[in-house]
Amino acid sequence: MKVLVTGNAGFIGFHVARRLIERGDEVVGIDVVNDYYDPALKEARLAVLDEVAAHQGASYRFVRGNIADRAIVESCFSGRSFDRVIHLAAQAGVRYSLENPLSYVESNILGFTNILEACRHNGIGHLTYASTSSVYGANSRMPLSEHTPADHPLQFYAATKRANELMAHSYSHLFGLPTTGLRFFTVYGPWGRPDMALFKFTRAILDKEPIPVFNNGNHTRDFTYIDDIVEGVVRASDAVAAPNPGWNGENPDPATSSAPFRIYNIGNSSPVRLADYIGELEAALGRKAEKELLPQQPGDMLDTFADVGDLAADLGYRPIVPVHEGVRRFVEWYLDFYRPQGAA
Image 1 (cartoon, rainbow, N blue to C red):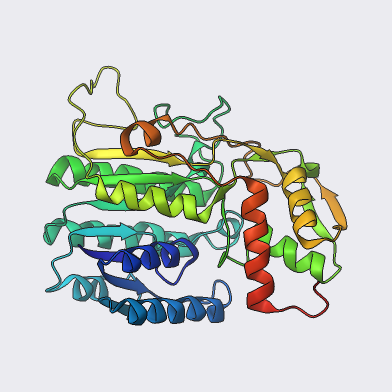
Image 2 (image 1 turned 45 degrees about the horizontal axis):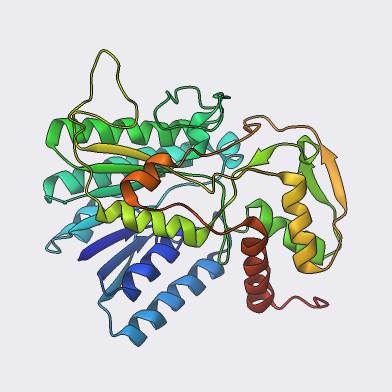
């Protein structure tokens, strides 16, 4: 298939594009490669994709451009006849949305609108896009299910991603565009983002600096390894969203529709306390962390726990990598990529 992957210089986009190239799909990637975090890491990911494509003899092309620019998006789609679009480009980060909300409007709202319009006008067979577990916000009934409303986000990042889900539904309803939204739960692993906890903690421990531990490490997260996320993304993209014939407007199911629209959780479905997550990192590094215990931050959810029953039933898959194994793999990659001085 011909597949467009937006955000392919990013953490998840890179891994998804690599997987598609390796299985023989024709892949076009688009990414602005901004400086939200170290562009050198993004360029290194892009170099790997070039190497993999050359080794495979695969059809792969990279477009350097901003999806918020409508002309660039239209040019990217022009004459290519994509079978699938996997939209992973976004302004990420929960806490940064408190500082710079306009960047989220540009990328997550305007950029997503441009992608929807391009899919509509180019007859795309299926749009799969990234959402987030953060949309559940104030929901406290665990495990978190796609079939319960998610209308109380706690920060602006989550609000923009929830808006994406609603925007996608409108295009599915009005124009028959099949769309599938994927709510990712705390993704981690090799080639991850430097602003994420595991990355920051690793660097601080190796530098013998204290790590900030919010809520005294007592909140839980459904940490999900990157390979499990990629498997879910690819399977979701392959399984074109279809209308739910049993959908009823008097008792509306938030995860499905009378339109070709679907939402899935992708999470490990095994929550881990932040303190225990740090313990796994200490074990993998062979070093103890100096912890600065702090209160819970504004906008943080207390706990996350994914119900992945639909993912398993519809797509035949459940995430399988346990935290201790995923953290070990991340540490191996980090030490090999950065080769920090004094690391054992």
